[in-house]
Length: 453
Image 1: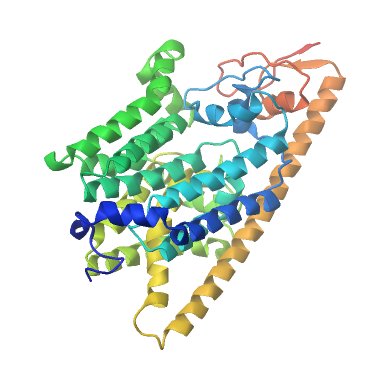
Image 2: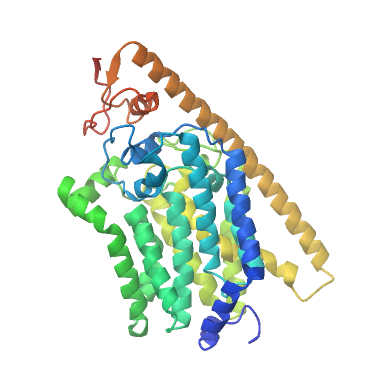
């Protein structure tokens, strides 16, 4: 067992630095991960139309750094990480297609870097399968090229957990500590509250005296990433407590809400389920969603039996922490909310799926490979069908907004507010010729405020 790639982390303290660095430099180890990331980028470009217009949240983030439109009102729950991410393109170009291509390439690179941090903790084949499972989800493909923060919190959390495990196994691994700080800062820049939830188990694991260094590194990273958000809270929102309170109110009041069924309803391709009513999706669409926690439990059982609990248990616990507020503390649902949980579950689930294929009983191996391939093919077919419907629905709604905006502009109307929270602002921004002033702070205005040009 000592020579296995599944050896316990505790037993690798002296060998970890040389082993990890060697694997990271080995092209044979990096090639499968690079192939998964490249396929992910290509799939986004082919399946999610680069010309698909910007959505409501995207419009707000992009407008903060756009040279072509004024900044829309930035509500309390938002963070400016996405605006920083898209600034290299939106600061000089108004092309939505160019922005989509840029984000697709960047999301592929982010997935590759996140998987790379796990080299040495799991075999390369497990990491490649895990990356494929996460990248093939319709929600991952749909939001990878969008100017939204959830995917970036997901890959940041995936890399952060790997860096934490490496630093925990080897106290001399300084690159792991720097990586942990950078990932924590990146997540907090994108979405501070989500970042805290995702690393909450890591903070708890850092409380023992011998692990305090990882605790301070994590806290320093979170503080660095959230610094702008906290300063802005006092400068624009009346303090940190007020901003958190306003953010809770905008999201319908955070508290005990059983949103598991709401999330299940959104699995059929609904970008936002608020209010979350209607029928549940076809059971075939939701099979993977119910299978995922079962595989996670199996992965933990396998890890305990193999005496390598930490590498599997830590990402599973972090996945549960990241998913908890969106399953039990919020009164509506969106599939993108659970992206960090899916990313953290991907590697342990891939580990348990790969085990029958790489097991010692060769007589069963062809059957195991066949069943695994058939299951993955069926899973991929379902994900692509849901993705196609989601893209078609979103593209049609964006085109309808654009036509309405053009018609209103032809009538000489300047729109300065919103209808039911979102629609009219998108019309104004997509027209490209209507000036949008700072929005009223009314959370749910019942009618738009308009004035002639």
